[in-house]
Amino acid sequence: MGRLGRMRRLGSIVLLVLALVFLWRSFVELGDAITFRESVPGWGAVLLAALASAAWLVSMALGWIWVLRYNTAAGPLPGFPRLFAAFMRSFISRYVPGKVWPAVVLWERLHDEVGPSPVLRSYLLQQLHLLASAAVLSIGAVPLVLDNAEAAAPWTGISLALAFGFGLIWALVPRPFFTLAHRFAPEKWRDHLAFQGAVAPWAAGFTIFVAVGLFQGAAVIPIWQSIAGPGQALDPGAMVGVVCAYAAARVIGQGVAVVPAGIGVREGVFVLLVSGLSQEIALVSVLWLRLIATIVEFLVWAASGALVRCRKSGR
Image (cartoon, rainbow, N blue to C red; front, side, top):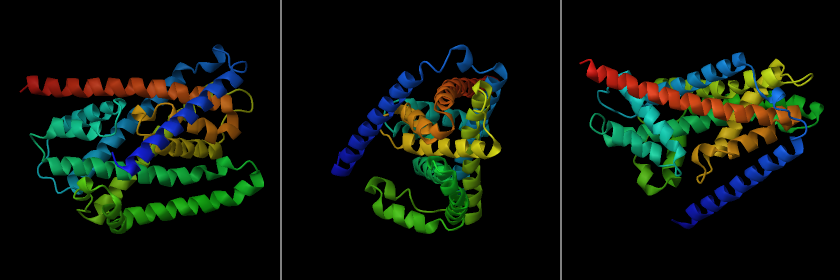
């Protein structure tokens, strides 16, 4: 491990410790303010959160398949059930410490049908799209971190303009980003960071990944609204801020190499960003979402594997 890798790992550990300390302090401070009855969302809210989480999973799988098909120079591909099952197996592997396992599992599941280079390139491009789309959405969380409403007002328009501008450049002028990434990426990844395919499918793929971020952040809203007390419910503007804050928290959580799936860090950053709305509701909501989303992930993974087995047995 080089010096840069050691520094990144040390930074990840520090960030993890800070996030866990913040979460624990929040639990202690809010313990008297949260009762069990008030912290359990209704079944309708749980169902809506589960549906939004399922939409997030399916849209992310579709985004990866889209990139594999149009931006990797891959040859003929297996059918959707086979690709979806491989994606879900790869996705679940992110709970194993280390960021390389999803790419390894993708290659292991598809190496007999798709070349290793397109598979690895598709994983890297998926991660780039996820980071870029989350970065675009994260800009919308800027007004939330400003306590003064008068100071936040002009930043709303500025943040929207910045988000739109960055998203447009990423979608329509991607090649300079690849040139920059190729220059600074580790040597073993450089061959897989060459832009391939046309710009139009690349822009369409980016749109899919923006939808991924919207679905993932929106899943917290029904839980929040279900357990919110008087004066704590979200208005439409606050809902947008919550979705953007969750995207920002996901970027930071994803960057922590020592934490599987960003557990703890994502929740801590989210609560910190939206604490101006309601710290106790934010804490309870995001923990419920982690539980619901994890259950949905494993159910969809099991269903995708069962579907592939049924198709094989029916031949």
